[in-house]
Length: 330
Image (cartoon, rainbow, N blue to C red; front, side, top):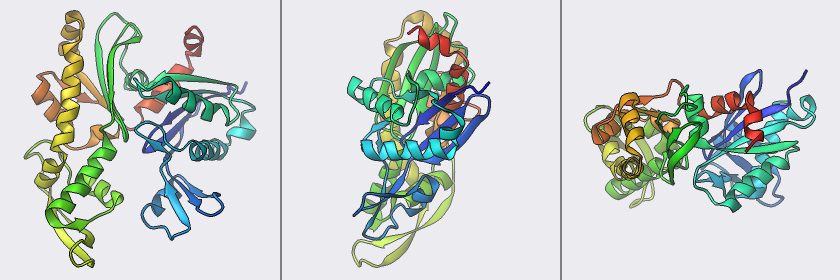
């Protein structure tokens, strides 16, 4: 019996696909390279990601997802089609049932766009589920009991904050500050301080290699190459972890402020549960050095990073696919 169920984590930075019975079969960047004249896709995923900021005039590398929602509908459709074909989705599954995740607090129009893009890949039925709920299930939290759980999912485009109990979301917020915003902060900081222009990919490398958000947690240096804005020539500078912390500080405190806002609106019984259990961090942003420390310090609540923060949402779709009958009822 072929079970035609696929779970998709359609992220701003990466797309992950989970097939029931096989686990995560695809994890690639959400990037499409297209020919500007013919609008034909030339590369999708990892191959297109390599081209970011390095394309000739007639080739455009596009990130069709922005802030967790679809910014370029046609390109998203091309990308989804390509990925589902790549995992042999078309021939192997006649018409799969697809469970796809979206940020909490997005509009109905944005939800419909995600649903439609998935339907047009040939799905039999499409289910939408809110990201923090799926992330918490993937992180191994038992949200079915009448007890409070808190998850912060820091992705590429959005940070989703949610308090869950009895299988549902009690309170949630979604802010458009996450991994991509951190990269932009680093670009801006280097531009303002050193008059040096660096690309998004370089900024991401800096964040991973020497980045931290907790003062004094890391003491590393990195040579950064870019274009000098004064001379227009290539130039190299040395950047330290402390400077990256300074660059990211404002965005980090915006996230902390949003988390505090949710905690303030939480019923006291659930607050007590969260102090006992702590807060779970998921998503790529959770891997930035010092995030759990700064949150624990500011919120006075224990903070834990999920076992595999990058794949939590995809793993969660897998668990939900086993319980699709519960979604049928909704």
